[in-house]
Every structure is written in C-alpha cells, then in structure tokens.
Length: 336
Ligand code: KG4
Ligand code: ZN
Image (cartoon, rainbow, N blue to C red; front, side):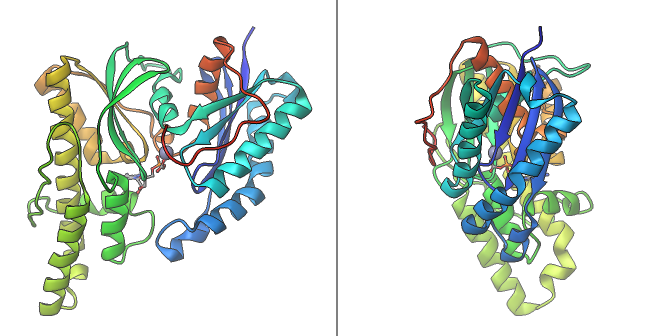
C-alpha cells in the first residue's frame, strides 16, 4: 500500500503544497507572491497575509492534481522552521487543524534538511546519493556545507558567517536596479556576459566557512565610483557585471566544497536550495565531476527553490519511523 503525505511549505514567500506517494511526487503546487517585487525583497507582513489567502486554494489544487481525496492521506507534514514567523504560522496552524480534522498524524519538517532530502524524490533516470555525501545547501537565507550521514543525521561542517549566497545575488541585483529575486535574473543576463570583464575579490575565510558581506560592499563601492564617471555604466555593462558577479560567487562556493571533499575524502557531492538552480553553478559542478572524479547530484529544477515536494518526502521518511508531533508544536525562526 502506498503512503500518501500532504506536504506544506510556507517558510518565506512561496505557499506550496504537494502530495507524495511514498517517495514519488503526485503533485507540487506553488503560489509565488509577486507583491514583494516592488519592494526589492520579502516584506514579512505581506508574506503572511498572502500565505493566508493562498493556502486553501494551493492545497485544494494539490489534492486535485494528485487525484486523491483528503480522506486518503496518511499524514500531514509541514515546515516548522527556519523561516519568517508570520509565514510559518500560517502553514503550521493549517497543518495542525487539517491533521486534527482528519484524525491523522502530524509531522514537523526542518526546511534546510528538506532541501537536502529533495534528492530522494523518486525520478526516472536519476539515482539517489548514498550516505555519506556532502551537500552544498545554498539558499536565500543559508549557505552551508553539510555532511549527510543519514536521512536525519546531518552535520554542518561549514557555513556563511554573514550573508547567504542567494542574498548576495539578490542584493547585487538590487544595487544594479534589477528586480527581486535577483538570482534568476543575474543567471539569465550572465549567460550573455563576459565573466572576466570585472574582477571582484574572492573572500578569504579560514576553514570551510564563507563570508559574502565584503563582496556585496565591494560591488556597491565599485558601482558607486563608476557611476560617478558614467551614469549609464550599469546599463551599458549589465551582462558583463552579472557574469562577473556570478563567477566570483560560484568560485567561492566551489573552492570550499572542494576543500570539504579533500578533507573528508567524500566524493559524492550534492547541491540543494534556491541557488542550486543557477545554471553556472550546475555546469561547473558537472565539470568538477570529471576533474575530481566526483559523483554529483543536482536536483531537478522545480525542487531547487522552495517547494512542498521536499517537505512531503521528508515527512514520508519520518512517517516510516513514526516520528510524529503533537498539537502543541510551535514554529522556530532560526536553524536548530
Ligand atoms: O531556497 P530558496 O527558494 O528560499 C530560501 O530558503 O531562502 O532560495 C531563494 C534564493 C533567492 O536568493 C534567489 O535569488 C536564489 O535562491 N535563486 C538563484 C537562482 N534561482 C533562485 N540564485 C542564483 N541563480 C538562480 N538561477
Ligand atoms: Zn529554502
């Protein structure tokens, strides 16, 4: 018998619901919130309001697309944290009442673990990583290298000391007057630009940690000086700027990943999180696979940025262990 799980994700600005049948995804429906675009970043108050509006239609559509009734569900899994409190509360409260109403177990899922567990979603012609593997988890709020020893046995061996890689893409885009979220926009423009046109300094941080705040400042000062000489500097050099900024972010990410692989001796390397959608990062990882004799795992595009499929599948692994949570569960905003 298949186990059907409803996954709910509402940690930031995407309201998402998915239905899994064991590790297979039957539906994965996401409502993106366009309301934040004009502010150049997520406005928490607006995000929770939009979640409130989106959550019922999104869940309704996920059930409809999966072609199952709510009475067939075995459990409800939801993102408990980390994320924005007001956003999380909408998903958590909905999950609690839905599970209570249906009299089925409730399963809490950690958003960052779920990004990694997205690699275990069953796909045609895609194999799962074996334990242990290393995962570079890069999103809007986090940048970390995780040693994954089991489904829920994960150790962060390197992380950013300040900004996340996605945040750096978003802030660089904002400085250049590009829309939010900046990552996909820079990625697209970078494809037609020269990555060697401008030199931005790579941060030098000890061990396996990262730091991106210096890079953000150097982009800001560089553009401020150039704009004084030529007010159209950004417009004229947009593609080259995007390619050069993307290059330095990717090179920084890859250097520590390589170091982590050398130090641990692990050659199974995965990437996860919103920034793993980046075409430059995806192709450099494929090159590294040949160069360093790695076995690499790149998530399907739709499972890179926030989605409920990864929550449903994480919920499935907890369901197998009967790791359920009670109605008293509360969200957490920072990573545990
Ligand atoms: O995982 P995610 O959807 O949300 C968080 O948990 O933060 O990641 C969102 C981040 C944003 O900063 C966005 O700009 C970035 O992922 N992102 C990208 C790309 N697509 C999304 N960054 C670079 N290239 C992309 N193609
Ligand atoms: Zn995320």
